[in-house]
Length: 360
Image 1 (spheres, rainbow, N blue to C red):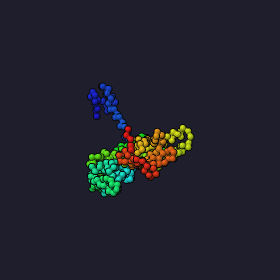
Image 2 (image 1 turned 120 degrees about the horizontal axis):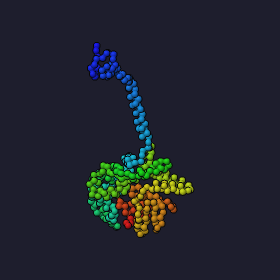
Image 3 (image 1 turned 90 degrees about the horizontal axis):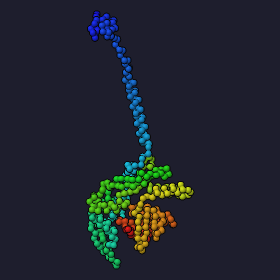
Image 4 (image 1 turned 120 degrees about the vertical axis):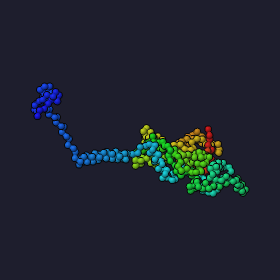
């Protein structure tokens, strides 16, 4: 059967390779098709997918394990979490921040001498908050008759009691925290002193309505909604630790350093002192005794007649315990009034003087 050139139409033999007229190639062999890659069987595909998934799982699990085993970083969130957990678990610590225990609030009546203006001012604040009825003046009678003011506990006051304490809220949360940027090691353990500003949770209704809310919060035993707490990295997590134990550990190391010679030992001792000097205390400033004598306190010393002596101050509520590091090392306590302007000096459990804060 005749075949024709597709370009010029000239007939050519069936086995011709080129057209005799125009020279175009005819009967060209088709290009061989590329060899097909054999498809993977379903079993092999499943094996590869399982192997890939297992490898990914190993990588992810390894990363997760490394993250779990790594110690918690010092940060605002880790310190805030540690302090929140501590205050939620320790009711006594929480009450020290949120409750007043300076008066026998559990009694139906509180009697106050007319000359005790500081206590009367505080109770008058609670009267305005609805916790107590307006005071009634009475005479004590007898040869040395004195005028007294009787404050009767009202129903809202009874509702605000927790045992024998008057409380402003049921709980507290960390609003902001610092100290995580100043981590130091003692005995191989990372430690820090955190300062936290707190916010009330489940605030008492009487406090919300009180016209003196800000003043009441300032007079809280801890000196307001701020707290300083020592933290340590325990079991790879930051936790609030015992202040006394940290102080004892620091003093033990300081004692060892005291016995060591050289500038390096002295530098370490200074570092330990700075680490365990737990911020300020409410006595800082000048105080005048009934005899007119001036006593001044700094963060770490007592100044009397121009002579300064180093001391350690520990604050617990409205009581400051002072231990002089020189001389006899005798301890004394100073109990502050609600206003922090009047204080009673006690030595050996006996009151020896009343101090009045000197305002510059």
